[in-house]
Image 1 (spheres, rainbow, N blue to C red):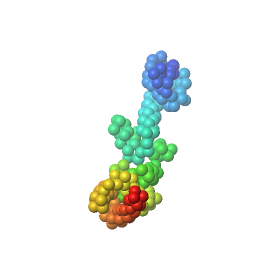
Image 2 (image 1 turned 180 degrees about the vertical axis):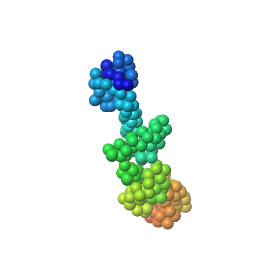
Image 3 (image 1 turned 90 degrees about the vertical axis):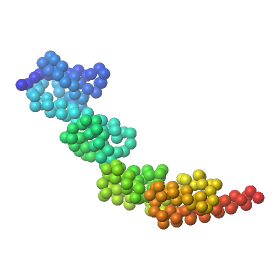
Image 4 (image 1 turned 30 degrees about the horizontal axis):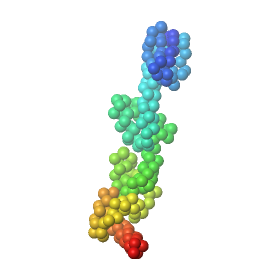
Length: 218
């Protein structure tokens, strides 16, 4: 049975939503975007009302996903989990994810590339460790491999990681220097050969620097 829209009123507490009145009585609320094409005097049947309410549910979930993405980039799996955990139905989650991908808000290839780039600059790790992190984020293997191809090689990454740790090793002898730095690099996924090569290089640099400082102190 068709009912007539008798009023459209913006909600006082949430100006982004509109209250819909049918036949003189409040019926339901919709987002302003969904309600944009409605007008007083328009007739709505049960099927149309159900479609509007479904569209409103999708719009609300879409905005929820955008808020989640606004804090930092997310993988598709992270966004799906966030929506599911909030009680969103599988059908709505699927539709929202389609919209997010279509608009470019979710892109696992770009997410993986940014993740590897950020890690390489601020917290360098071995390719293996980066791959593990991305798999935990739900990123597929193809996107991971493409991102890792743009990362520096293992020795470059290990060298960058080690240099961030050197200030803690200024008073260590060679054994202490080797033990602590190898443990630090190993925890970041670097293999023994890579660790050994970088440690030899940095110990040599460190010893040379200490020698220069010793001469200057005399």
